[in-house]
Structures are given as structure tokens and as C-alpha cells.
Length: 417
Image 1: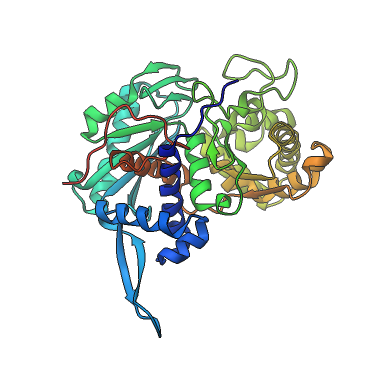
Image 2 (image 1 turned 30 degrees about the horizontal axis):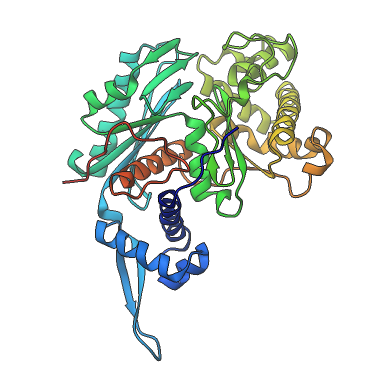
């Protein structure tokens, strides 16, 4: 296989983002501190900082005086360079968050979606309502927004702005980016939630201390955002990470994708419901009409010592440990981070059991330093990741692109007026 050779421009772009990431990690910093953190030469940092300052992405936070020598400047990302929308669209909700350019949340709104309705018009209406409410809560105008990143479930082609296949909604080749740009009047970038959670973890989670990891999302569906050597693994058609549709049980349960025995058929919410029905087919949690209500009922029952739900947690952690073992053996990664609303509700019961069992499923050479933990990324990691994508796309228009994560842009984003 021929691996594309990095050009000098690629290397400059990567260096620019090393500077930006250093400021996210360190806060206001001098050029010398940025150089030490990134390993870039002082001359390279000085050149890149000059470009950032000229574009208004950075500003001088303070000027400080040494006891001897010239004063020195502390640099920071300018939060008022614009506003960014990060939008997490799932089968049961739309979460829209307004961020500044430092990716600090300013306002948020959530709209509940009826999981039994799935037409593009219905979903787009929900997105518009969530965005309008978030913008209103932030007290800003649309002319201040430099981009909107929208995560869509299923298979997404960000280079074409198309939702290729959303199995829970039976969507096929929906031109979602164009539909949203028309309704929102904003530049839109669409991607898959697995890529979003991986980017947010790379920028604001364990990615600060490791170069390779898997971010496993547990919810209606399941999947893994994968980072290798600080680059998102996308695959040929942006479908890398569909770990939920790898095989757990030969000729096992039917999966929504049409196969039998997929990981998702055991670890997605419908999989948890199926497992509980095998344990106690008349359990009260199974009468919850909505997925989130079911998961909340499971968490509450576990907290009160429900024996059927304890068995559900035991079986689910067994399935999860075996599936994660395959992921580790395939990728030889040392960091697994769990995220998603099922993790938020049930992680306290699942993660300790997974840690105990995982060595039974992992090759001995991959065990040293292996960690499994819940994500510590604040807020909604999908919305945050989509905002980070939109920030990268905006910087592309300034000649500050990051080829490691964002695909080539189909359209340019605008600067705020």
C-alpha cells in the first residue's frame, strides 16, 4: 500500500495545530513555554504565533517584565473570534450547544425526539428548534457564528455532506448538510458521533497524555472512535470504528444492520432490553416506552439491589469485556475510554467488572498499562467534538488546516461579520 508522503505544507499545518493544542492545554503561555510543550523550535513557534495574531485567532493576554531583559508576552486564544455550534443528533434527542473559540460552552438546549418518528423533515425540524433555542439562550446573532458542526447517527460522508445510512431511521443517502444549511442559514459540517467523541477526547481528555486510544460510545447504538498516533482513523468511506457491527456471537441475536450476533445486539439499549427479557420477561423496566426511561430504570434498580438487574449488569459487563478484548487485540491500544448516555447511567456497575474480566480476553503483550475508564471530557463530548471540527474547518479558511482530523472541505466557512 502506498502511504502519501507528508508535504512541507502538511507539516506546517500540523505545527500550527500543535501550537493551538498547547494553548488549550496550558492556558495563557509564552512562546518559550509553547516551544517546550510542543517540541517545536522557538523560530517555528514565533512564525506561527505571528500568523495566528494576524488572523485574530490569538491575542496577547498580558505583558510581563522579567527582573532582567525584555518584557515577554503571554498569548491566549481569543474567545471572541466567533461563536461555534456543536450539535449532537441521536435517535432520541437533539442537543445544541453554543461555544466560543476556546470551546467553552456559553448556552445549551435539548429537544426530545420521538424515537418512533424518523423522517428527515421531522429530524431537521428538531435540529432547528434546538439551535434556535441555544442561540437565543446565548443572546447572539447568527452573524457571529463561524460554523455549525452536526453529528448524525449511522454512516456519514462528511466530504459530501450526506447521511449514507442510518439504520434506526431507515435513511439512505439523505443530503443532510444541504437541508440544514438551507434551514439554518449557517455553514454546516456533518460527521459521525464516533469521530466527534474521539476528537473531543483527543483535545480535552486522555489524548493530552496518550497518542493512541479508542473511545467507546454506548447508547442506542455502539461504536468506537479510534485515534492512532494522534490521527483519527476514518477508513475509506468514513466507516472506521463500527465496532458495534463486529461479531460477538456466531449466529447470535439479529442486529438492526441485518447481520446476526453483532456487538450492538448485546450492548446497545435494545440489546440490554433483550438480555433483561431473557432473565425476567415481565420485569417492570421493560414496560418503559422510551430507551432513556429504560436505562434510568435499570440504574435506579441497581442502586436498590434488584437481583434481576444485577444479573443484567453481570451479563452486559461480560459481553463488554469480551468485545473490548477484541478491540485491544486488533489495535494494540492501551487506553479505552467509555462515553455515551448508557455509560453515564450504568458505568459505575459495568466498568469495575470489565476491568476485572478484561485480562481473560486480551493477549498478555497488550495488557501492560491497559486502562478502561469513563470519559472525563466535560459536558456533551459529541457536541464538543463537532464544535472542534467546525473550528478546524474555519481555520482551514485562514490557511490553518489540520489534515489529521478534518476531511477536505467541500465549502468554505465564513468569518463573522
